[in-house]
Image (cartoon, rainbow, N blue to C red; front, side, top):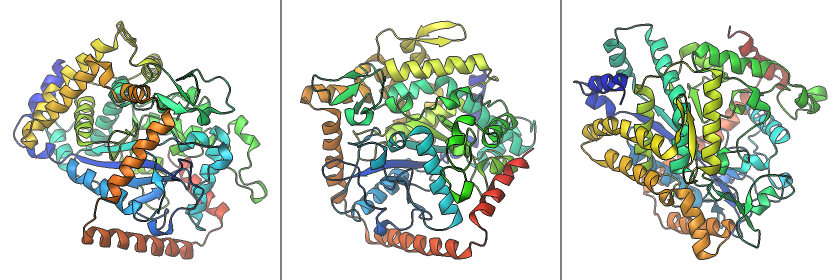
Length: 529
């Protein structure tokens, strides 16, 4: 443990902080494909019984009509957050008939891009913008990549914590800037250590061969002599590698987290400057919108990263404009696979570790990061994605190479003081237990979810599709059997009704043409500096 971290822990152990650690704020965004009972991607529209995907606070769609996204509100209780997510699953199952929710990150049987229906949101300008953006993603990266599901974990500390920490630090800068810079420090450390989350929680070492049909070189190996499954023997999370949310075009995009200005400037430039390879797709010529623009990024959300700085936006406000207006409000963790081994794809023990890990990233010293260190971080992430369980795997550090086992053990050991503080705040030992569970996975790679996926396929003589289908059917029965309380059903039904009404109001209130709407939206970027 470094002296800096020791000092931070001593401060947190002081009077007044115990209650604040009980008030960590979190939220979940969980994606799941809707599939037929035969395990194929559904071709039906977003179910009417789930309300408006444009305005529903709990149930929307991501890229495709078939890719549901469940959202929980900000919550200080891990258990209540998971209960809320479970309620949304049960409610959804009551509305989708015989359909199932796919239980893994890598998709079910797909028949090429044409089999993936792009999400629709209505006739409003904001709805059309969302749809055009998705068509642009399909042209740029292919629709298949957009069927990969994940879990996003939103994390923040309460305002009272920041006020107290700012006072204890001697008020070195305006409070808003202090909060933003501390979150940027968290993000830099997250990039240094995110390979650990991929190793511990990656659950996508294999994929159905249909996902890669017609694709050239991919580097995966057949899992069996029937070639129904492709995999990497020591892989952890194909979703985070070249098959998933990765972009060759974006690899040259240098995004710096040393200051908010650096971050905003890099993304603003990528949104404002044309990218010649994308000029082949219409961007409004003759009213034909196949993408929002021909820039490297259509909007900020197109930038693929394992973590994002975020702030809740006002209606019509660009995310970068929101950050410039009021600074960073929370961070969004984007590298979590959907685990097939739990009903929700994530459980309380994993969330406790995420909280411990993120507090470590926040409290540890976080020096500025340069291009060479970012290249090292990218190499480590790629190595763990593709070979994370390989015996003796070496990762790069500023001081030279070291084994993953040694580096992971050191990181986990440095988190023990944070786990102790969280256990003290919650009168539990659950945070220490979660830390111990992760150390066990470091000691024995066979305990990782990625190893378990391959082991169960091998022991049961199943292709990836059949294993994932079995778990999808298991959790479908689980949620069908969960009787929701009457007041919960009433609340979700009301959210559904209100979402449909809200969509009608938005559509009725439109006064601008789509061209004018886009011009006004993108005009925000010109005034950021």
